[in-house]
Length: 373
Image (cartoon, rainbow, N blue to C red; front, top):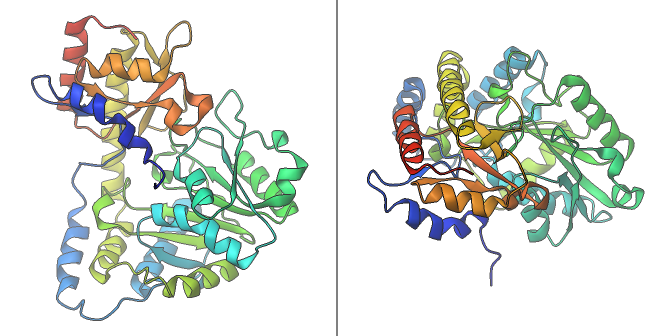
């Protein structure tokens, strides 16, 4: 039997929530439903007629140059085209990277990842036949690398880091990220920074990229910043030798982003205005839900990034599945924190992808029920 998909465990709660008038308000998965930028849609349409040939696996020059320009504007880091590779969304990279890096270095068999995290970090290790070892988190939901045993560190092939964090919304500052890079380099571990939510980090965006970038890969997505999850396009940037290796190996798997999607991505990366609009949407929804949920005994104790709320009961610890069940009875679906690791078992994650009017419906029904978490 294949390993169960984590969010499929929510099917019963989804059916329960959907019985209410107005249907389920699904805040369980970070599935964008706001419109993509018009420039991206137009670029995709214009490129469709010419998409008769296979696109390059590593990505078109247009996309890679747009990624370089965006990195320079966003982070003030200079990169070149040989450091950038397109990917079919970033989830496939998260799932496949451990196996590909293990082919390159079979002497190491361990994947380190945050103890409360996107489940595919661990699943990628499992699918590759490797050890998945969670790194304990501190009180602010950041990895505490001092808790990694020397034995695990010596066997580690790669270390995942994620800021802003999924599911906790924690944001790492530049000093913390730099320390993680140094820690990994000293142990010859590839550090892979999942920076898919970088646009929502706040006024001082950070990246694991530096002038050297040796042993570092960063992955970026247009799914959230540009509402292009259905376009399935992202990119990897960093260590030149690793990017070249991955680009060559991935040719054998036919992992090519369709040319029209690459054209759309280049247009979206060249447009910063729509990202500011999207940030405003998430900030508005966050402020609205924080106030309403606290009145029902649910408080956010995660970080400041506005895409997710990381909620716990205000009082004695409670099981996340029980919280999710009570909220589902009022028509809203959230994700129990245990899906992201045992250390998150007393939390739930609420994605702020629903439009404000749907969130208002969720709060109206919650208010009418009198439910407290």
